[in-house]
Length: 566
Image (tube, rainbow, N blue to C red; front, top):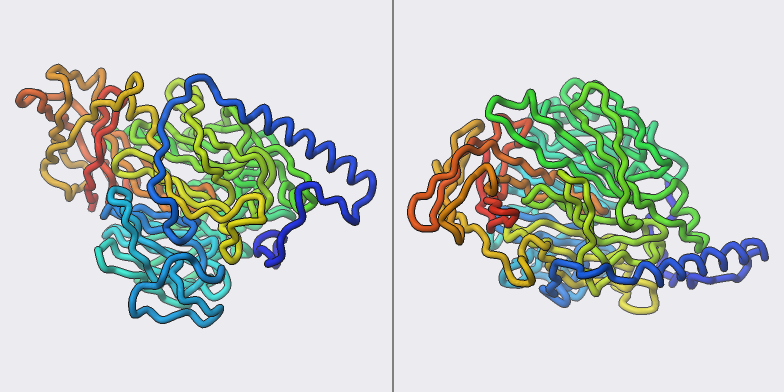
């Protein structure tokens, strides 16, 4: 079924106040809506008092638009857009063949090093438009689906200095366009949903049961006339079940036995949260206990979105306001209820990024309109940090670059946020459109990296015992240096593990923060200290794979050390 707005047309769109061939009544409504939008824009562009945080342009152009980004355990970021846009500004790697349909001798993927700002072109052959991904236990990026010829493709990218994409055509059992992925406790990845795909499957396909589709009627039940159930939000619960949210509804899925074990209340407010009324979602940090997973609380936090029908109205050049609402739901409670909150500003297409401190950063997006080309209006340039423990929002320093449709954001090992993408127009259009194609990458430093206007003194991890390969429920000893000689764990020291994410369409798949159960802190010499604790108890809490381990001292995170749980 074709959906309006999914595939952009080559011709330029009409202007915001196009009035040809519409009735007088529609013209009046359009003028009123436009004046209201412009009034709000003039009001919303007033900066908050003393905003904090710092922006830094890393690269003016990486040659492509970072429509999708994934952090690899090498510290590099794989970024890519789509392969049917025509020529990018990035040449293909030497010796790689040109594409024939359409003719194209440019690359559409890059491996970027945020520290050196160097990039290496990668080769993609099939169309990755609106695809999904997750990391395997050995750190390989598994990338699934896309559009047209790529909608049943599975791609693999290993984290090595010379590796390139390996593509397997027809490796999915059904086309996956706008689907979501989640790494599982057994090392597989579940691929769920997509346009017209009311089912799920698993990759890689090692066993006979992996070569089977599993129906999920919930996905069809959440589809309205405007879709609004695409890129469903997936979060692995501490009990091993899968939380699935689409449109306004959510369930807890036993994917092993293909049964729904719980239906949650609808999220209130009449706001759709998934594409094209695009909001965002995170699983708030899990506070781990040495005893196991039975008493671990899991809470989902969803923000932004818009009323159903917002894309249809945007096609008529009427831009409805985005929602400022957020909701928290404790999915492990017996009878949970949504607790609603309000952001400082409206936001659609915002990215929610979990920080190593346990707080949530909300960044990118628009205040009016819909996801889709030319359909968003009034860029929201100010990030917002949400302090989950005190339930308070803080508006941060604005970016100079609008990040609208197809922007993305990722947490880096140095605790900064990598931000890229925005409106990758067909044929890399850089003029004559409301928001031109954006090829730059920025890094945002949250307030925790600054104290009273100067760079914070950060803890520095000097060693991990028994090593960077960690088993479940193992005793850990993390050595670190801090500026002071007197440290009390109950006051200032935390150890968190963060799973690297795959980010696209305002949803960072697989991002996960685990706050370890830690005990005493010992001073070993001078400013050297050791904090002791335990790794996650099982694979439902922490699926096997690579994690960034941070020491957080006084609210300031260290640079991460990579550890592998197996």
